[in-house]
Amino acid sequence: MSQEHVDALARCREQIDELDRRIVEVLNQRTEIVEEIGRIKREAAMQIYEPNREMKVFENVAAHNHGPLPAACLQRIFERIIDEMRRIQKERMEEEKKV
Image (cartoon, rainbow, N blue to C red; front, side, top):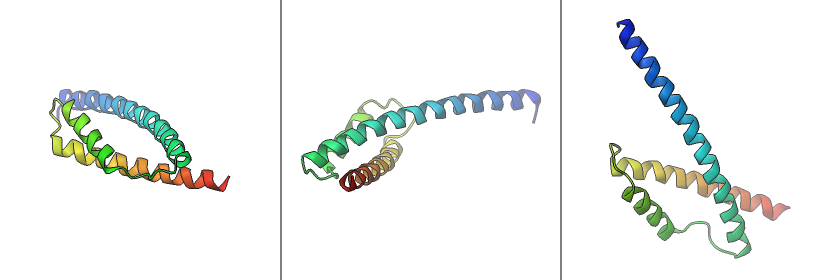
């Protein structure tokens, strides 16, 4: 591999590292909101799982996706994000019941 290739890869990896840090920041912001939603749902005696809301999330991200990420891939990513957020919501709601 030439030095030009090594340098190009290093630049790309630096960009990926920066994007990953931004993704972490945004996911933590999303988590804070999810925790607030969990508090509201607990107070209102609502269920955590809302399939209609999840469908709206998928529709929203798909509508704003201009590629190159395929829609099916994006949906799988958001399914995983939503699964983790639901788990966090449930844990927080159970923790708050104990207090």
